[in-house]
Image (cartoon, rainbow, N blue to C red; front, side, top):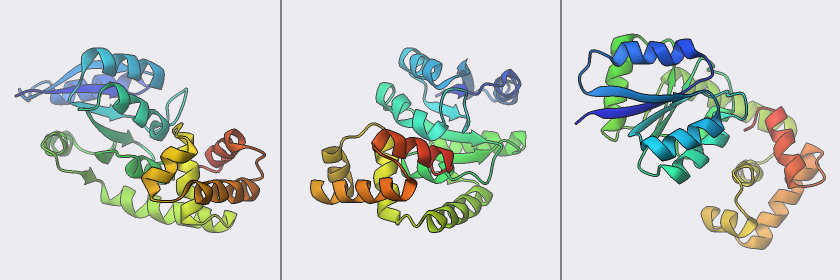
Length: 207
């Protein structure tokens, strides 16, 4: 069975590079590419890939924001964050949001092929360098802003477009508790509403 891959990256050289790396495998094929998150959603809907290699930083939004949009139109696809950055808090948001893996772009061709095969088979693979640095950096940023982990989770889910009742259900909280967490997070972020809170969280590289 051939693993069909969609590569989402605004640098053509990355898309061409992945295509070249998997060209001789026989069981992995790049079926399409996209340079923006919006184009990725369209491509995922049309191509129905098995696996999506998603850049962390796209021109129109972060990979962590694009992830739920892609999953919504291609629920069977496994989404993998593919990034050159090992110090961005958005990695934690992507993993919490359901990414099937996070890989650094400096992997060798042999490593990448093996990792793609593993992820396609259902193994969640995260480069150890990403796991260590992203978690440490996120915790430091939350501490600096005095945000609790729950407040962060509520803002992160709000950034994906979820309503307060949906956030409450996902986190196992009451609606009033979610509202309280969101209000305190807004105060700490210096935001007047949830839209501003999400924007401020993005500026602080929490999302």
